[in-house]
Amino acid sequence: MQAAQRFLELRAPRLARELREEAARAAIGVIENDLLAPLFGVGSAAEVDIVARIDSPIGAIEIAGRIDRIAETEKEVFVADFKTGRPRVAPSPAQLRQLALYRAAMAKLYPGKTVRCALIFTEDASMVEPSADALEEALRQIVDRI
Image (cartoon, rainbow, N blue to C red; front, side, top):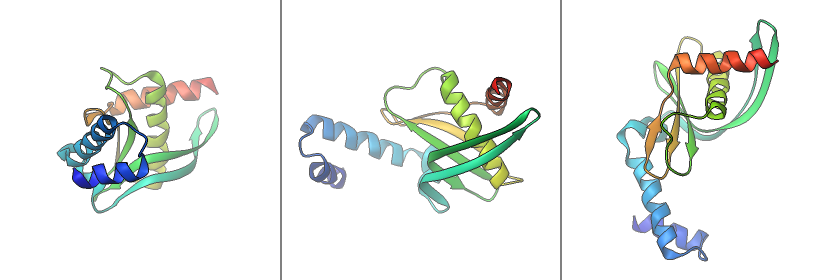
């Protein structure tokens, strides 16, 4: 905790001390959450730029974006998008579409591996992982808009 506080003192000296402490606690909470451990271990990366072409029956979707965290294990790829604030009961339609596009892009890059996508809320280090069905439906909605 002290190292995080020192870092924030150097990087954000004008931010109120209480806010720096809150930010440090939130960051440490995310890192120490066992469910999120793969995102910070071997085979993980931060701020991964992606450019992909996702083929659909009615045309191609070209996307460009930046994945907050990604981790590859022997059997799966874990994609995380960090959100500030408190978690929702369910992801918004826009969040589902974003994760659906990330999932489709990663599936092309990692054939044969399961691609999991989750929203990580930094305020309480909670994770919301939409089902594969929810992500498939969100992707279908994107394709229907083309």
